[in-house]
Length: 564
Image 1 (cartoon, one colour):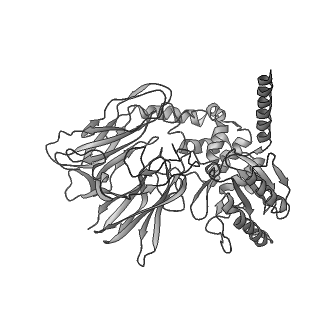
Image 2: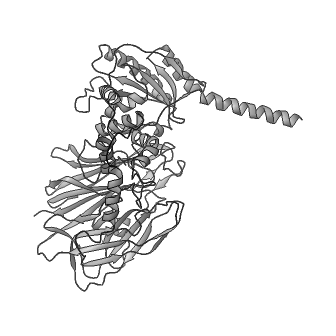
Image 3: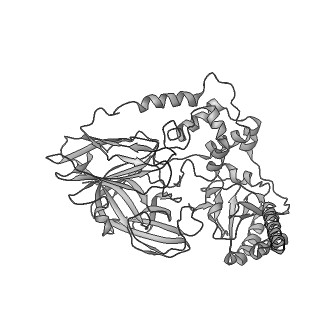
């Protein structure tokens, strides 16, 4: 009987504990860049006890005084486990922002969507957020109540959301008001965005986990679509749109996000249309998928290994060494990948390798090495690559290909046999396209949220830089590519502030860079080996450089060709 009473008491205690947590108001996860190009996501602050943000509006008369008071509190509590930031709730943009007198990171609120989701109304509005449970500790103004709540969070003594209403300079939301009054039209406003940004992967037989091939499907998945846009999971928006540009990056602009979010918030109305644009596009894609080779029959077709993909689980890389039957050297002017099963093939990389050399080749031992990179496969694209005029990838006689496959499971057992079509060139005096792998060696400590990394290389000859690729494993956090100018200053040409191990595209630059002989390039980034990294297998583990997925690596790839 006594044991039974103890059990009942424990159960009641557990229920009450759960109820007390439930009293905290829920908030949506969100992700933004700050005005220095750094990535911030609420759920990635689990290494801190709370994330505080204050709405900033430079037009407000007493904003400077509010910032000074807020920063004073930040100096007191930052070392105790609370992160403090400002939020540009008026969304004036990076170029127009004046950081004078501001010590904290200022988050750019594209389309004012984060401010809207957090119920921001006034300049100086403060939100103290729980990154662990995605909930609200405090909402209101900078006050003694705010300070008391900070102490309560640190003491673990807060069970209910504390509200201390603010007032003052009202922040307007003109786009929200306009789109609420007249919601976007599905056929003319929403479907074109979905077709351009989403439908190539989220199609029948595509790598996306569900097809967005009709209004009904879009409506059904709209709550998840809203979530992944706000936290920048989809489209995989890894890059900073303010640094360089590449058509291979999946950009989603503020206006596009506003239209989709406000359309969903309005109930996702279908409107009146004679046809469904998503259904029409899905049917067209099915016809295109049945086409053979988009550049005509290849000069040679490489057939990859037959790879079995189970219905569930996380798969490590699969490698395939391909012998080529050529009796002479070849120049490649273009290639095309044809996935055997596009629903599971997530990416594929192919290098030209010497006899007896594997996929990694000299990268195993050298910090900076030039290699012959064919191209990478990425989901949702035609995967036809034509190299710049006057250039090509060279395959010396006797060399072969090394292929690295990355698969994702989709609930069904399948087999993938991918083909690579090679198109040869008969031109003379071609410039060889190469990739410079620039890496570093390191010891990555456990529980390190932002372990800074750096690598560099000097191009001894004049080259034209055409693309970049970031390569880390599960603990990769960010990577920038920069050129050292005269005088030692660095000019950033591309930035991946939200690195994702699952997405490793090769970014072809819209504007190639001509680098004089002797130019030094830099790869700058960081690892996140903490509990805040959602892909981290074990934040307690110390790691060193290694080429296996359970190791870590820090390598930036620069694609280039010599320019006489």
